Image (cartoon, rainbow over all chains, first blue to last red; front, side, top):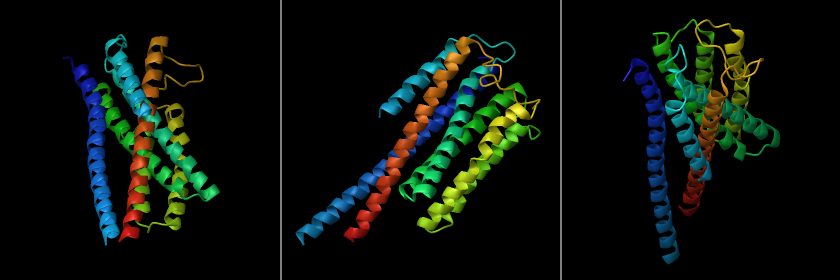
Length: 50
Length: 220
């Protein structure tokens, strides 16, 4: 691998890592939203039962 | 969904062509970084421009939903601006032997643009949510639009001896071969599609967050 190849690979990896990081952060966010929806559904069920 | 698929297809095709099809550009063996760095920078400008457009719509139409759209566009723009600075620094380290050069007006102006939009978040989160925050954020995002042409034209007007001159948009037309131009256009389209996909997802997530908060308040 030449010196320029290392820099090219570095730049492309930074971009790939940023996209992957975004996907990871977003999957955490989706999990949180799912949990909140489940909590609200449970709350609504309890209110209906009461 | 189709935006994300289009972004993935275009970026894989464009960056793949840049790495494996385009012959080495004489004098700059690290030129494939161009296909990443320039589309990312132009996408950052597009995001900031979109944020200003939404901010203008908010101030004009008094429609509160534009606040979230403008904010999300700034959010995306800042992410692409960080990537512009990082990929540019990597290219600079190979070509100039330095990560950053303070004497380059183009670099410093882009940094100013990035810092300006980073301060947007400080302003936004220092004010209570509501119409006042929406208006202040919108005015700030609109001010930022002034910096865009300055930053974009700096590369042309500054006669920068360090940052390479523009090769795509020039008065004499593109200064690169048709093959290079084709790959550049594919990469730019892919990057814009990626930004649009991220913007749409982020906006949907933020709207869902708001709706859930409202629902929780009404249920408790």
